[in-house]
Image 1 (cartoon, rainbow, N blue to C red):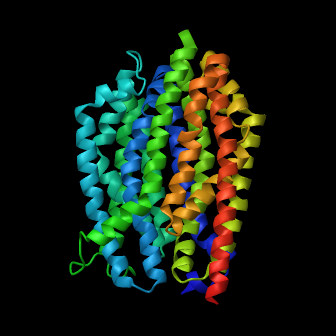
Image 2 (cartoon, one colour; image 1 turned 120 degrees about the vertical axis):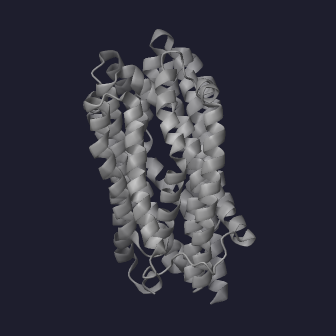
Length: 449
């Protein structure tokens, strides 16, 4: 009831703050984990970790395909007061998470070396990348269940519990990582093991929530576990974040190859520098994602209930918050790039490459927050085609041609400039698309009154 009646700012605080806390905790873990690897294993391990980014994006892609689609339609069903269908979604998400994790994880393990080499691993970085990904892939069933069901938990009215599960994962991770890396000297494999152990603890917490009859939506044997119409809707809505992560995978492959090609003798270190930039970027992007995760149940419920004015108000507040977050990120990276780089490594060459990257790559970063919020808005209200279009513009349609052309003339600087230019153009397309859709939707809403 409160999703349809309570003040939008209060609802955003109620739902977004827990999601932001969870996102910040996860981002901080990724940063600290990279710091442990950089200082405990070495600069080449940072480069090896960066090589795993495209494969990690694929791992996440097959999970978010289910998690985001399931969360969106469960909140829409609740807006339509169809609790039985919302419960069916939980059951379907659990089965699909297990199927995806076993099929994807198993196939990837069979061809792991070939995949990592294709993604840009060199003889120097391949051992580190392989050690890390082997552990992560064995843990995919746990990871998928945790992420998939945690999204449903948040969407069905339990944002604080969803935050607690994320904090459990991060907390266990941060305790075990230094023990495994420094004390037991397990290297980069120890970092991956800490990740899987942390997600295991969080997964137990999430499963307990959905097995409890006190939870508003929970597992019920009488409900269907694989429903064709629900599976179809999950895939349709989840296709946007899925393609976004697949695009990110493709893009990172091109970025890594461009850095290796144009970096010459410092190619591996340039890839490591991109790893530092990527971790820093994702810290602020994940905060914006926390805002969009908080917006999702509010948008989905009110869109399902036909309350377009509340939908628009939620969106506008979300856009301002997104822009404020990425603007803060731009200011920090512009004012203290060297301080950030030194958190990850003491290698002077790696620090210099990363500093230069921060100056160029973050030029249009303040606009990224707006683009992310708009893209996730279309996803939350069940318009996956528009969300897919916007994700493709930022990560594929513009960036890939830039990466093929600009570095030829400007080398490594051209790689950073390509990413900045695609961010600026994607912002323009996102705002234009939103204006057109808003006009059509407002006219339709007035005609129905």
